Image (spheres, rainbow, N blue to C red):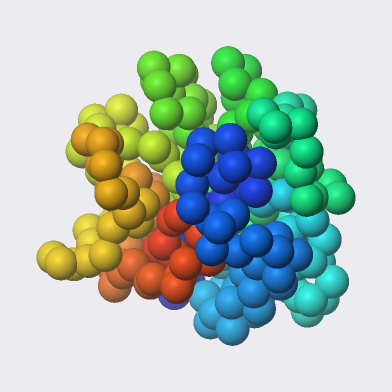
Length: 235
């Protein structure tokens, strides 16, 4: 049994470029970064997958969580602020895995059709963990196909991430070999929205070769525009 979680922590440049209210809620990005790190440090999950991690946030995690095994993929694309400035010292963007047990990196790659999204795969405790951020347009088809390749049939695999589409669409793309965790009725959205028609449940825990249970959404008290999704992997 292993407990896992996924959280898009929101890169500050994306926040400001897309008009989120996070900059208003947290005018001091260094304070938000410290709060995100402190929140993660208190979580009991053995594996935590993070998306949209800035270089500043990664440095904070490495400094505060010295007892964890932290793996990161840096994207080739560096987010650029539309207004020309950013409070970040290091605006690079990363996928990150925070592990209780040591892990062995298997793959770390941006998607060939999007240098600002990708997948990071690490084996730990006999399980392959993949954190991913999938593009929110038609490029996703090739990206989901690549994720299916990383989940080889001879290995227990857990996919964690921001898929930018709902559960039904992901299931149709990946096929019957994969199981997507069911969230309880009445769960908070994984990506709350006040407008638009896009799904509010786009962050998923997906397994191949094992079972998933006890999935839930944990509210993050305004630290990000996404909530925290966790589950237990058994079998």
